[in-house]
Length: 262
Image 1 (cartoon, rainbow, N blue to C red):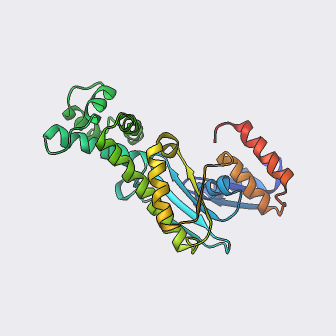
Image 2: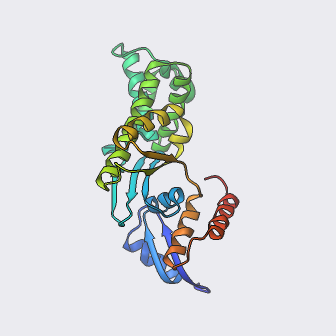
Image 3: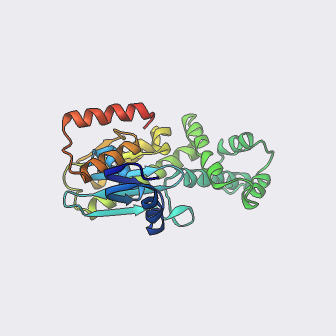
């Protein structure tokens, strides 16, 4: 029921489309209503509504940016069959492929092989083959295996280190590409790092920063200042014409802390 009419509402949603918008309009009464993909409020959660680029690297990946003129660009986000380079699923798939090559004798020995077997409670990689192709191992569960790559890299495994460095380069390439398309690559540009891949791997972060700096030398790196939902609140305030004063920003910081981890 629409018991309250808001002055403005901003919704950042995965897979936002006209059908979703109609469903939202049945539930929410707002004088100004805007719905976007959640990459938009992810950027706002980093830049507080200012121009910049955000790289979201979780199970999948997407890179999104806006410049001072309001122009937008994005890269990656082609999902796990066509892209998502540097995301959790991509890292895990590379690890599994490396283990298969090791198992066959076609590739460099790697600790990833034994780690995968132990994690999944199996004795050989043919069992992993059956789990994957029978879809008993869902995509999210495969992506979760990316943590084994960081673990192996921390122990000095060369194959794992190579996978993480490549993940960082791919994510950095996407960020640099978006910055260039928006003509922000020559000046100071905020580049946000959001998602579990960045939180989980120092090697990915290092490789990412190096690659971005090759393409945007004055890049300034940042994690999210707010929880993503507070990014939506900030954009709703802007939509309503509210000035983002220091007091307003302090209230948003407090609200972000109250809703938990960023």
